[in-house]
Length: 292
Image (cartoon, rainbow, N blue to C red; front, side):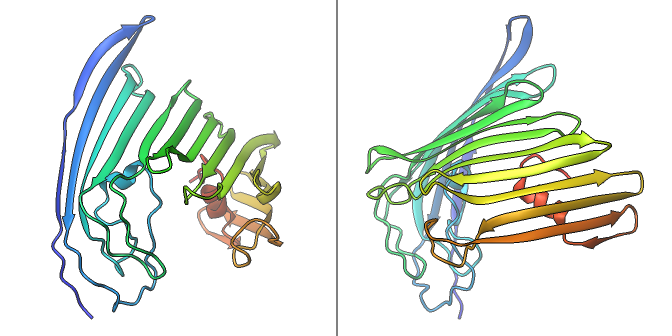
């Protein structure tokens, strides 16, 4: 099985900047329009087995992808242009982005006829309009939010917002909210809150926790609670986790909860024993970083 597909993409943009002062502080304001054209001819790929390709989740960065499918089992067909604009407010003294705003959308000139098994031809002429807003309120406090507007439904189909506190001592607090409706004609598929924390307790012991709660089903999606300690020669972590069985019903309702315990002892400069609790925390507690 083989295929040959030429890909033509043109990525172009401009960058405008202007320094100014506000309340005795120096800032740099930028405006960055961007144009991205993509052309890939349509080719029937139904004879190619789909091992691990799936659709990328749609976000602002998706506007500039050359393939909306992950892996190589499918290569999309495309004749489209993405128009986007980003504006930033940068602290000239520290280089921190105090505020950033991005807006963008894809305009399709043809139907998308390449799809995954179980999918269908996509005929809409516009993608969701994506708006992302973020920034740093202080050196330790930052926020990020995003919404997507669906033209056909004339409604917001996705939204998320989060605020993070993180200082130099690795004290972390995250608070977030997520809304998602993949089918504009149906009710929301996800309405969730998400909170997590890492905080010092005593004698170099730190507590870590996360609670992900579904407002749609009034149930906990995932939670964990743990302790970690570090000395000059070793690190120790223990985490108790409770989570939804992803292999059961695809909805939250009626899913059974599984439980597990992670235990890890790491001898600095030598080796570690037990589960990779540090990798689990990096993935599930935003802002967490393993100490080197």
